[in-house]
Structures are given as structure tokens and as C-alpha cells.
Length: 265
Image (cartoon, rainbow, N blue to C red; front, side, top):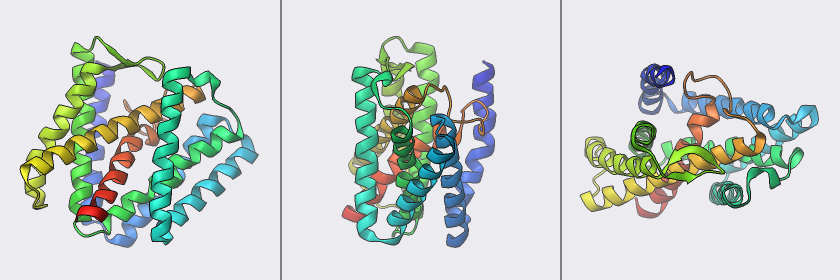
């Protein structure tokens, strides 16, 4: 109960701030905030992997290098997004099948962690500057919050079948299904308000895809924590954990929304 209360109180503060940043912040301020958050996330990676001084330098060099490549070139944006999601999803699959103890530790793990911040965080910026990007990023936030909330509470109340025990023992199939249903419901309600001009069928399908992508991102984050041997990536959000605990699902969904925007809008 205490954890649930902390989650609600944290969300009551963090969500309005995130929404204001997306909808109202000038582009330079938005870029600065995302870059600062990416650096914070890299610091969490250094702590999670126990990388030490040399590993920490590697994480920051790799993370900021990938971040810059994604932001500065259109080719980099495509390549970095596909690489980051592909590698991190592969890590998730490996942990789900073989268990985290078989993945290499040390510098290799720290370099993998650099993909979280350096490879994924640029997409908050890249999506926001696209046509209808502010609306799409707002939709991503609404869908991911709805999916996470439904999965957490319904899974806690009714969850019986474990989803991926080796990745996250507490996540359930019932919670995942509830999250997808909530994603579609949130998309159908929010998309028309944002003026995206999408038909109901497309909104439902796109929202389900965003919800599924967010759940994959959340599981990928759990897999990385499992390999690192930590429960949370940090402490910045009471009841939620660290920045990466909250941002990974959003970032995976933002990557999908960016590519959808490039191809269909």
C-alpha cells in the first residue's frame, strides 16, 4: 500500500511537469532538459554496472557519442534507433531464456547500458521537432502512463500467470493484457483531442503498438537490472525507482512513434 501511495504521489507531481515540458517548453530548453536527463541516465548506468572509473568514462564517451550521432544526422537517427532497440530487445530475449547470470559483466555490460541513454533519449527530441511531433509525444506519454498504471494495479490485484519469471518475477500476463487494453482506450480518448486526424481503427492499432512497445521497453529495462543485480536503477522517483525505471518504456514507444511519423505522416 505504501508503495502504491508513493507511486501515485510521484505521478501527481511528475506528470504535469512532463506534460508542460512537452507542450510548452521552447525547443532549446527541451533539448537541454533531455540532454541533462540522458547524462543522469548514464550516471545510473555507471552505478548499476559498478563500472568503476574506466568503465564510467567509457559509458559517458559511448553514450554521448551515440547521442550526438542520433541528433546530428538523419542517417544516425535511423541507424541508432534500430540498433538500440534491437540490441536491448536481444538482451531481453537472452535473459528470458538463459537467465541474466550468463551475460558478460564489466565493461561490456557498461557499454550495453550506454545504449539506453545515448541510443534512446534522442528520440524525445527527434520526435518533438517533427510535424505533429508535440501531439505524438503527448500521445506517447498518455498511452505509456495508462498502460503502466493498468498493468501495475490490475496485475497486483488479479495477476496469477507470471509473464517472464527470469526477467521480472512480479510481472503477470493479466497485467500485460490490462496494459494493452488501457493503451488502446487512452489512444482512442486522447488522439482526437490532440487533433492528429487519424481514423479510429488506425488510432486503435497504433495505440496498441505503442503500448506493446512500451511493455517491451519496460521488460528490457528489467532484464538489464537483472543482469546488474539491482532492484531499481536509482532513487529519483519515490515508489518508481530511478530515471531509467520510468524512461525506458517511454523511450521505446517514442522510437516507434518517430518512425511512424517519418513513414506515415
